[in-house]
Image 1 (cartoon, protein in one colour):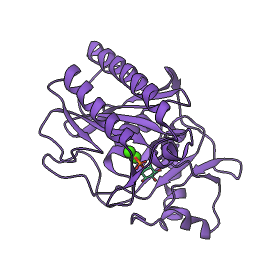
Image 2 (cartoon, rainbow, N blue to C red):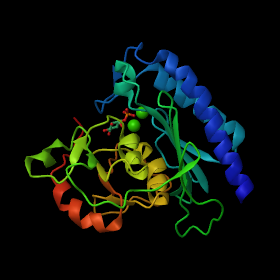
Image 3 (tube, rainbow, N blue to C red):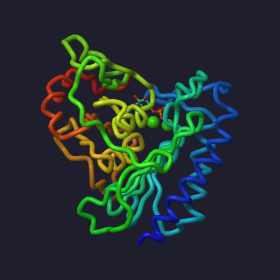
Image 4 (cartoon, rainbow, N blue to C red):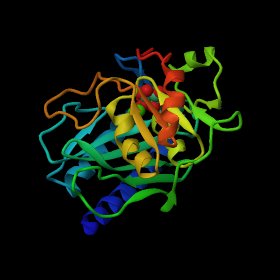
Length: 272
Ligand code: IPD
Ligand code: CA
Ligand code: CA
């Protein structure tokens, strides 16, 4: 199985590096259109989406693919990639150098590997999380191939907690941490995996915002909590995931779920 994971990792590194290099040339220079859900899309998102799909089809011809800019139906395939070609399109469009390419690899509907690359930051996160899939191979979470772990600290006013634009209502009440709002769902949550933040919340992420980070965060020791009653994975074959949001809380360790869950119930789960 390690040979397979070596191939997966090398594929992700090479693909996101070359696509990221190309995207950096367009950052801050393209007009964006608004999609029906209010989010932005540029020619670069569409180009990267197509380039990643073609690369997957060439390297893993028996794997399925679900991408933000193309097809949202979960396919009847044992292995499936879930792709956000640019996470943080608003930052990308405005010239803020924090945005990433997110690739999640699912086995029987559940993420077992995630890879997220932020080209300007030159940061590549990856992680293996097999759960009860029966798969074996490498374990752990990594930033630029160095192991990363979530923080063991307790919340304080000198620790960080990341919000999204639709979760600011939680600040109406006293909150135990300093807050940050990065504008990139994957990076918001990956900062918890890297130990930089204690927790983070995303009110309206889509499946392509969270598939890769779900594996990486847990591989780093963190806890991923769905704020909806249903659990997110396994995804269901034939279901359209285009319009579904998955409000979620991520914390650095299990004991903090009971601390933060009551504090984040004020998030707005409608797109704006
Ligand atoms: C969005 C960003 C944003 C998050 C939204 C996402 P996009 O992704 O990650 O930070 O709050 O929920 O949809 O549209 O830039 O890929
Ligand atoms: Ca996104
Ligand atoms: Ca996107």
